[in-house]
Length: 541
Image (tube, rainbow, N blue to C red; front, side, top):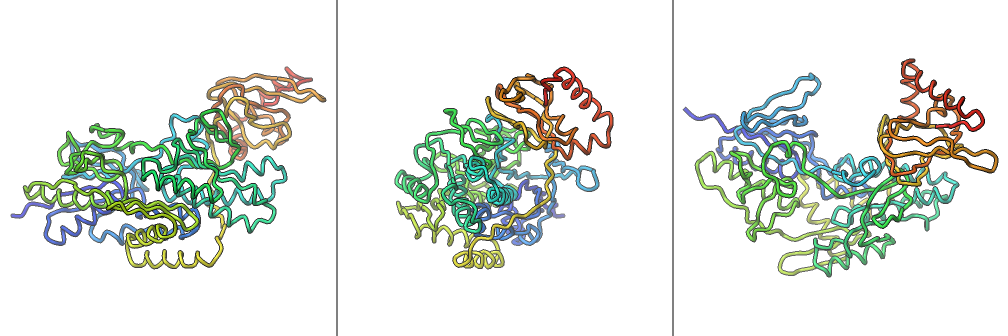
């Protein structure tokens, strides 16, 4: 009697996870006794190297996507979040879906391919005010935001405010940050031609990097210098040897205290382990699962890891870099090692050293660092960049769509079309630095602010003089009087210290106040007390 096939569960649908499942399918077709299940929160695979081109509009939003059910013919697919993993019981619990019930899957082998997640902790205001760049949703959100900024800047008459809107700041000078800044620069400078009221010389693309050169440590010094010079020549302002220290609704704050007025801050650093990876209780090294060269996770039985979340040693003992080319080859080796384990054979060790590095620099330029000391820069490297990644796209249909997009991009202008996805503002958190104005007297009352940490000074103008009428601290709130009366702000609120607040939008405040009298009443009471206490100098919050 034949033994049942080994149940392999793959967590994650990036390069590592998808190519592991593909390789296992191919081995199963040749007789390997494996049954493959893949769990991913989306039902598609994203070709990550082209995400910056989504921002620029060089490729369509869905051109980077491949449906998992078309890629993986025999793999069971669960489009869910992972709720828990029990290594002792060898089960994976999936988060509830429409049925509101969790689902439990049993495994014989577990492949962890969950990558990393954006982690803005440790930099004040970054979670609230920076746009991450890691997923397709991030790329679409950035593109929509940038187009929305251009629309508003075209109607803005205040010069300082317009210049802040037209200043786009990117933090991080690695491959992701460099490619985003370059793509953004190409797109914005082309798109503003459709906005006659926007002065071309007011557009600023600023790249903040902690090193002395872009891509330092990623490429040879010569190519890193070329990349730095190339971006500067395209009009991108490079702030080198600088770090982002804080973010507010209206500025990016650098380590030396310098503030860049902006409404757009894109951060490509840092990242941290997926929470599921952290919850496994397995050894981590710099946030990645500590693996043998066979892809087996140390200290575990039949648990494997691949891709960005795995620290896999190469022949020279150095960790395998978190790139697509390494993840794909790790995946193929991992599939063979799982089958070898089931057959009682000795597993193989990861020996791939890399085929080189490619980085797009915008304006039809790129850099390429290849084996045997071959180095390319400029248009030849750009043609190689496009050729290599086009060839790696999964499926003939995907290749055709991207080729058409690229050909049309050579002749046609960009399309600055904003996709209004109807996202609700709801309740959010915001961070302000000392001295920053939260709202000014005469502004539209659009939010209620509740202080989490820090202090706020409320000042009101009496004739030619502005006086302090209230000082507020944690647990107190302000901004309610303008919302209750639907009037402009009657005072100015300014942060006395670094400040964290919870922000409730006017629409949400009105909905709650209109349907819940017990919610509205305390705000009316405090507004009345503030007015009575300062009849001549009312303390508007």
